[in-house]
Image (cartoon, rainbow over all chains, first blue to last red; front, side, top):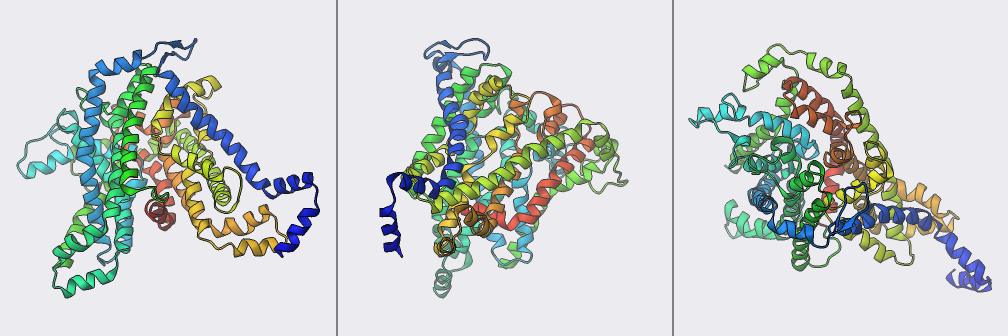
Amino acid sequence: MNATTSKQENKQSLGAKIKREFNKNLLVYVVLIPVIIHFIIFQVYPFALSFYLTFHDWKIIGDPEFVGLKHWKTLLDDEIAWKAIWNTVKFSIYYIVPTMALGLVLALIISSGVKFSGFFKGLFFLPVVTSFVIIAGIWGWLFRGTDDGFINYLIGFAGIDPQLFLSSSSQALIVLAGLSIFKVAGTTMIYYYAGLQSIDRHLYEAARIDGANSWKTFWKVTFPMLKPIHFYVAITTTIGSFQIFDSAFLLTNGGPNYATTTIVYYLYHQGFTSLNLSYAAVLSYVLFFIILIISLIQRKYIGKDPNHY
Amino acid sequence: MKKIISYTALAILAIIFILPFVVMVFGSLKEVKQAQIDPLFWLPTDPSIQNYVTIFTNGIFIRWIWNSIVITIIPVITQMLFAALLGYIFAKKQFWGKETIFWIFMAVIMIPQQLFIIPKYIMFADFGWINTYWALIVPELWAIMGVFLVRQFLQGIPKDLEEAAYIDGANDWQIFFKIIFPLSFPVIATVGTFAFISNWNDLFQPLIYLTNEKMFPVTVGLASMLGKEGNFGVEMAGATISFIPTFLIFIFFQRYFTEGITMSGIK
């Protein structure tokens, strides 16, 4: 079959060959060319433009003016920018480990053979598909800093005084972290659930024969066997935590006293409230470099397996 | 013993996870006064749909829902189609620069989207796209994540099917529409579900590219309601309505969706 085809090909002229080749891959060109053009317009060009912008003053109207490193120097002396970076790091500390732990607990429960596990899996996943606006609206109401706020009412039973929550500069970021943990733990659960399914049953049998109790089995078998999942989830959760914006925008507007001004919130504020587009572009590059470093660590430890995304 | 711990933990977590949704639905059925007096928010003593009537008769809410539908449905359809086509091309076709192009695409999803916000705002201001659907639809016409999922799926499918079709004289388009598309539909449905949820719930981009209240999707609309000293019951009625589409999609495609998350993560 192949031999016949190549003989036929040899008889064709060069032009016919090119035409044949083109027709053979017509589908590829028809689809790929517009996609590449789209990619250049909406991804490559903005990426370059953003970089260009960090060295220019640009108010949309009028021509951009070259200012060199001015905006980068502003960053160095900008206390709020550093505070925003620090807030984002603090947010990560409040957020990463609890999200992983909660996701793992949820996965362990639904894979432990409880009844209606499919229903509960769905329930725990529900916040993931729900808009941040809805969840923030409800959380804002639950965590009202007034005496009759839902959570204040509840903790009143335990004899705890009403708290300010979102209006307290020491508590607001923690409440926002709690909201985010609730919002994304379902995703973490799914990864851990998949990880738990792939652990070889024989390991559990061996542990049982050796007389290990369930606590010991968990720490000696389950937890170490989930190592690739721990790493993957840690990286994605960290990257996610540096991009936090919605809850700070919806509930605290970065306050009180900049306590919930995260990098992306500050970027938004500089760009679209203060209209310092160039400086906002600098801040977006700060975010980019932080996430790049996290990704490079990921590559170093997880390796270059292209399936790890 | 192990069972008791499991069920107790399950019960506590289930209550915590369901509580916000109960608050939302109950809140939407309550009168303003009752919502303020009763912090624990148990069953509405006198449920009424007045809040729903209020939100639908204030005019702009229906427009917000419509805007959300427009900026969601079009990208969902095109992202499914492009995921299928590009996934097929990258999995099964041979052409110059294939691997390079694919990995450049993949590298870009590692860049935080916030980096594109400022330059895109400037571009869209130039195009006259601020306060139009274009700014939210055109950039979302295809997404690399879906392409990646379909490609992964098709790489696991033996070539025999296609080859048999080629021998029978089918061309690429016929093979794509008659074999590849139906075959990979579960993955394509996942892509559509992902696209629906993320576009319907997106807050950041519409917040930046839209300033005219009439153009707001329901997310930004609701956020603007939350910002004002509003009526909690009406806000929750709005939240409930905007939640229904994602909830239905989630119920119907839950299996695909969770599988898709696993597939897009660790193999």
